[in-house]
Length: 501
Image (cartoon, rainbow, N blue to C red; front, side):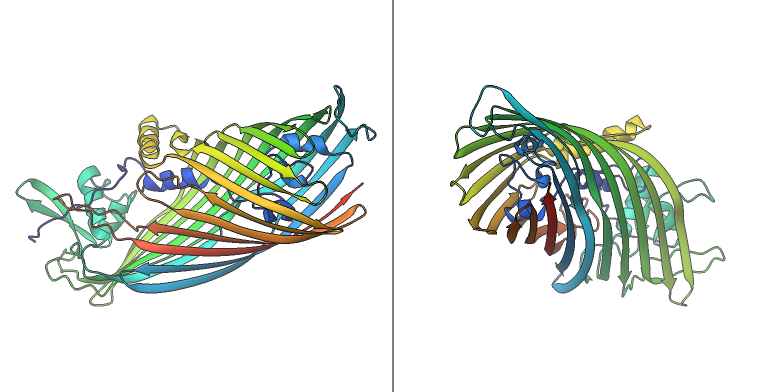
């Protein structure tokens, strides 16, 4: 078989795993977070660094505990509605998903001198608290499909085989092995020496992908804070984090007609594949810890400033991976190959997070609060028992990601026992080469009666991003990577019920 090869170059070199790029993606996923806290805090866009006095403040600034003069207990429930639309080679698709969760519960025990409300030069009390908050939600579902006129994923499989070779006969350990077993790539001879070619590597194939994800990261913060003179509030927190992420996708290429690609089966017969599927399943479970330090300064009755430092989260993650490729030929014969039950364990260190905020209070009528965060995603570090592989992943992380600034602003206006709230947040893009627009629009209402309170909030999140099923660069250096434009719209309704005692 003679064929001109157009090799695809992956952005990350494949060494010992099926796809190193997935670890680079996971590193970012587990380092990001959504708006956290109770319904009240989420209603003001999560702008809580300088506020205090709310169960939802544990996850950002533990110094906020110092404002308590009574014990407090609160629990939250949430209903999420997710809509994702895509555009791929002129074709549109849409998916919907609904989820229910219990993302937060917490309790604070206060020991304060209730008679001292003005500024003094003494320690006036301390508070101990424990709170569970959901820091990120991974539930999503998207589909894209279209006719690709220029490339096929099979050539990426051929490139893997060319760069790293195939496993020993009878062993299936990589995507290239599975592609070879199912007649999607074939060994060829070129003037430069032995190589591999892929089915329909010049495109003109229909491509489809559906990906479903679920899971979340949660944190339990054990916090302590003190109140010095009703002016300076200091706090510290130990965070225990849990991680659960499940991803399942199906990729398909069909309407294939490539008469120049004719691999031979074990009986010496040519095989002409006309469609094939690639299924991939990933399950990650992990635990981690971090430390938070915070301070809030009451400059006067009207103005507050807050600051907090979050250490990296040190995660230990356990992985289960399954992958399979099946193909059909012109005689409806089915060929399949799979990798099942791969177990793997590694460590991940997320970036340091710095938070600053200010709040302006208008007597007892309400307030305006604003926050800013800084994280450097290029400092994420991956480690395992394979130092060479770790170096590849960490180099890819530092090359792909950069620092980001997140901004949040919100306000509350009180009408006797009723409070009206609104907020907005914009999370900066972590990518070096392209932008992702992640915005939150929030609003809600609260009711207070003696020591009982209930808050209802809506959070509308938009995320626009570009997704590529594989990376394609021709031998001349032209980038022909297919891309799908994904637009995600997510709406949460959260209810928090609490009591002070």
